[in-house]
Length: 273
View 1 (cartoon, rainbow, N blue to C red):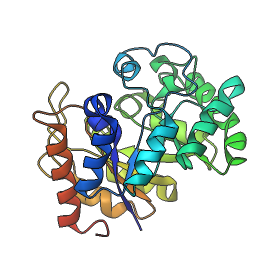
View 2: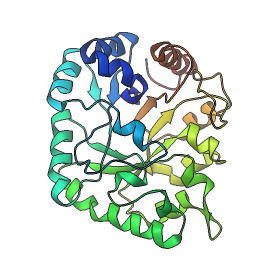
View 3: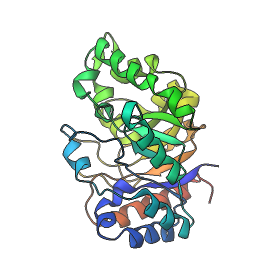
View 4: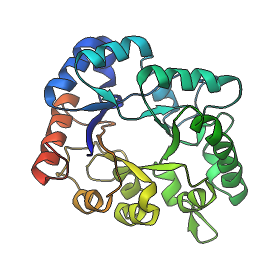
């Protein structure tokens, strides 16, 4: 069964103002799970372009969040985390254990401390990034968890020796590292998200679903109203365990946009209802 999930990043302003009320509304809309952004293991400010936004995201106590989620029958299907390594490994993994989560997603290269977007511009940089991620696979697996990687446009639009940085990275990552394919950013980066999903096959465990004009600087729109080929990608992702509605920026209230996204999924029959 594919879980209908909301990335809490989508309603981050609501979450900062009223965690309990926000989670109650997420459940009332009909979502079954959430994907939080977690701060355990964060040691330094994150670099631009989106680092300042993430740095400003609300820090939520995992024990409090878990209690509220349990009260409303919601689960944590996955979470965006920092790399569990070194002195920070236990902090990251302990937090996810509290949340009951097994799928840890690296949001971008800079969620591996010491790396920024320069890392995905050269073969050597990609290899160093992959080596760091691979080194954390075993300690993560020992806690019954897995590491995954989430794409933006950068990995798709950067070409290294005839291959996208994204393709090169996954060729170097341990096969146990899964993919969370963000359909919108893949499209904006010039990739065909369906082809990306098919190339990764069983490694595609999570989908980030958002839509819009796929043009830099323009707001996103409800699922099914933009240019992203959602239907094809959803049908290709036969191994996905969660369809995650996510919103970075859109006109109007975020809850209205994500509610429309959930209705789209139900109308398409791509998730069980």
